[in-house]
Length: 131
Image (cartoon, rainbow, N blue to C red):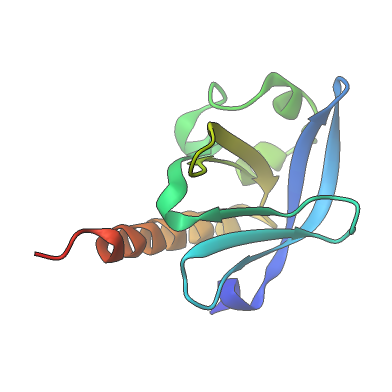
């Protein structure tokens, strides 16, 4: 329910050797098929991906630092690594993509990961050929 109504996150972008922090709202569409990360500024592009396109999800806590860009890791402030996530996805007709973002706290990160696993499993089940 929280995900369909939207909640704040911070998208992290490597930019000219630094780290740009973009306040955004995360939400799942009403059909529970797409993730939307909508920046607070109209000058920043939104990040959207179908749940079926998600290939992998990384957190520093569970997967270590090797799955994250050095520029993102180097720009983190104290304690932020425990709130960091990276989503890898494959857009139809395009190459692999990824983005990093910070959750509000470690509990929100855990809820996001658990919820996303359920939503992705549901999306994959719904897209499977019917026999």
